[in-house]
Image (cartoon, rainbow, N blue to C red; front, top):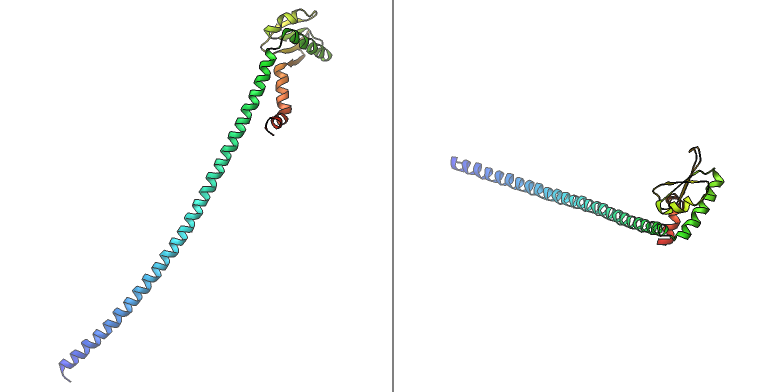
Length: 184
């Protein structure tokens, strides 16, 4: 066996070994590449799921906010309607004919006299003449829709039966019933 032969065998063996190493490295690289692709796909699916969940959560949040806004707008509109009803009642009370206003003031004064001794009667400017015709009481002007605020001689007791106070009490006490009548 000559040197050339030995050299050739060594080179052939080295070539064969190199081929095996390259093949092994190629197989390992393909395995790593396949595993990486699988991991990327799994990550993409996970990211897609996370994104989908995030989008669904955002949709729910937007829908809840929209539903809240709609409910708030409905409530605001209902409040406007109720306010409008009370404004209309207030307008009608301001425009009562003189005879009806006089009749109401006398009834309210009789009611106040059941609770206190009345010396002063607070009423609006339109009712001045009506109150001044009543003996035993003194008129005091006040800014109210109508009705009266009765006061004792020593100023310690007050009975407020003005239309303002009566409307406020009606609103407080019967608001739910009024809303049912208007909206159900």
